Structure formats: structure tokens, C-alpha cells
Image (cartoon, rainbow, N blue to C red; front, side, top):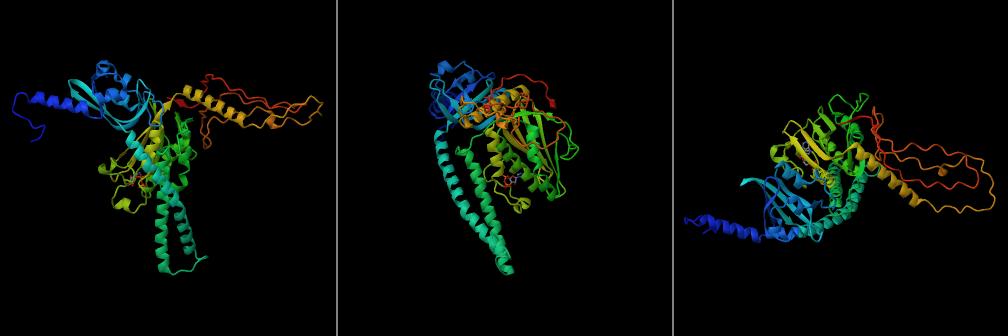
Length: 486
Ligand code: ADP
């Protein structure tokens, strides 16, 4: 007979409650139940241990935020808008298996956890928060990642060699083969190229997982950044006979007809942004038949930057839509079967976006095209200016550190220098506010000037000029921003 089988005795409800309590007391997962305003009503022993709150009695009646202090897996502080737990609690939305770090209140220890939130209509509106220590899982995953990374790295070299020899065999100037052999070797080369791409994608994906790369955040104007990346795809889109547009509505083209765009600032890793956009636009091109259209757009949405890549291509079925961001997942239908791919691109997009505090999702209807969204934290123009000054000061410091030792100025008489001062005698020119290449001619430049450019140094008399030490600049508000700030 099942343990939970209903008995007819009037004590059955009580015994069920006892069993439920027994389970909650003994499971290794932390369980916290709050009321609708987030005040803790129940906490199980595993949650008491993990949060280091002392005892259930001390925790009950407190706000959940006092116990569940989170940061990212990578150890980055989470702002309120980035914090998935706060977002789920505030919006009464479920949260499923989100990986973050819990900061234990007494020891300040970081515990990697997988956290979920379930809103329920219990006694009033309650939220059930469950979380699991995933230290062991991550260690195992780390070993796997290390293995995949090493194997991919080692296998890339022989695959490149095979590809090289196949190219030689297929080149009429270096080899003579009959038509049948050419067919076989062409097929072999296609497969070796696929293998090469697979190893490269695997390496890219594992680099972040095994900590070989970390996001390097920079303040940037997102419209300029995304437009610059997107414009690299114009030739590919033209070749595929696709109409490729960037802008907030379909009338703005990459060509002459540029309009003023909304200025939206982000704090992102520009390499990660390139990888995200490359994968999304490459997919849009790959999965859209000739004659179709692709639109890329960036806009501010409250405290988020929202990027979308929309295409009028083959679309994704509802069944596949829930899986496409998983590693190696490829929708399998007559359209996709003939289109090559590794199933790792969207996983990489998700991974990179999440490492920057972002989120990705897709909307699509089979046969009717797709839209991929990337939402990232947005910063205000004031924050952008402040961060730009930090960047600029770091660059000045780096310049100072790499400068060769200054020559000693001798007291002996020195011949007058008749030439104007060499450029090294000037203060370093202000570093361009944006470190990413931006294509020309937006009607407005959203980049604030943090300091006036230095005036050319006057001709220097002896002794030879010792370059003045550049001074870090102080923050000052500059409202003279062009563009439209929402
Ligand atoms: P792949 O290398 O197979 O393109 P991705 O991870 O980039 O791998 O994409 C996973 C799957 O999602 C693809 O195999 C494809 O079925 C589907 N997909 C991705 N982007 C699009 C798109 N723009 N239109 C239709 N299907 C898409």
C-alpha cells in the first residue's frame, strides 16, 4: 500500500501533514514559504543551514531578501532589476532552476545554488522558494567542460590538416583526380568543415564555462554598437537576396536614409555582443529563403535594453521553440535538414547574454518567421558618463605604467631645441569615448565629451621635455548629449 494512500480514518489529513513535515524537515533542498509581500512564513532546516540564519524562529517574520542575498555564478553583484529572485517575487511569476550564488549571512560564504520560485494560492497568495546546493554538480560539470575543451582544442589541428589535404586533392593545379573521386572528396571536405566548426563552437562555449574568459564590461551606446556589428552582414544578406534593415521601423536603412535613433546606453562586453549578434543574424540569414527580410532593432525598454532580430524565414514550431537554446538542439524538419549547423549557436547566445545580466527568448510561428529578443541591463546617460571617466582614467593609468623610465634631466647646459615639441611632449590625446568601431555618419553623436582636447604643446626649449603626467579627470555632468534619451 502506498505511503500516501488515503485511509478512511479521520486522522488521515493529520497524518498527511505529519508526513509532509517529515519530508520538508529531511530533504537537502532549502524551502522557504513567504506571504505575498515576501515575509517568511515557513523555512525548513536545509534552508536554515544554507542561509546561516541561525534558526527557523529567527527567520520567520523576516523579509526573504534578508536571508536570500544573491550574486551571479561569476561572483558579480546583482542589481535589483537583474536579480531573478526579486523579479519573480515582485511580479508573482514563476522562476525555474536559475543558477546563482547565495551569500551565507554569517560566514559570507558563496554557495552556488539552483533556485526556483512558485507562486501558489495557498492561504492567501504565497510564494514557495526552493533552492539546492549545486557545488558538486558544478565540479562534475567543470571536469566535463575541461575534457571537452581540451579534446576540441586537440582535435582542431588534425581536422585542419585533413581539410588542407582535401583542398590540395580537389585543386586541379595540385592533383589530378577523376569525377567520381572528386565527388567523394567534396563530401569528405564538407564533413571536415562541419567538424572544424563543431570544435570551434565547442571551444567557444566551454571557454566561459571553465572560466577561461570573463566578461569585460564597457559603457557603450547600444544602437551604435549593434548597428556597427549588423552592417558587417550586409554583403552576406545581399548575396542571399535578403532585404536587411536596421532601425526602429522598417523605413530606416543602412544606406543614406539614416534617421536619428534613440540613444540607449548599456554596460556590456563588446566581444560577447558581437558573438550574440553574429549568431542571431547568421541564423536569420541561414533560415530565411531568398526574397525574405531581416530587421534588427535596438530600443530602451524601461531599465532594459531590448534588441530584436526578426526574420520572415521558415519559423520554428511551438514544440521546438522551448528547446532551441539548449546545447546541440536542432529543429528537425524538411527545411532544417538541408541547412548545416551544430546546434550550439543559440546556447552560446544565451550563455553570453546571461553572463552580462541579460536574458534571451524567441517568438515564432512555423512557416511565418521568427523574432529573437535579447534584453540587457540599461544604464542612464549620467551613469554612462561616470563609467566613461573611469575607463578613461584606467587607460591613462595603464599608459603611465607602460611608459619607459624618464631620462634624468642633467644640470649641464643643453643646446636649445629649435624644432617644435615632439608629440610625446604632449598630454596623451583623449581616448575615444567608445572603444568599438562605429560606422560613420549617424546624424547625432551620443558620445559625451569628457574633457576638451589638449591644445598643441608650444615649442619646447631645452632641456628636452619630460612628458607631463596626465591627471585623471573628475566627473562633471554634461547634458549636452545629442540624440534622444528616453
Ligand atoms: P544551428 O547551428 O543548428 O543553427 P543554433 O543553436 O543556432 O544551431 O539554433 C538551434 C536551432 O534553432 C536551429 O537548428 C534551428 O532549427 C532553429 N533556429 C535558430 N534560429 C532560427 C531562425 N532564425 N529561424 C528558424 N529557425 C531557427
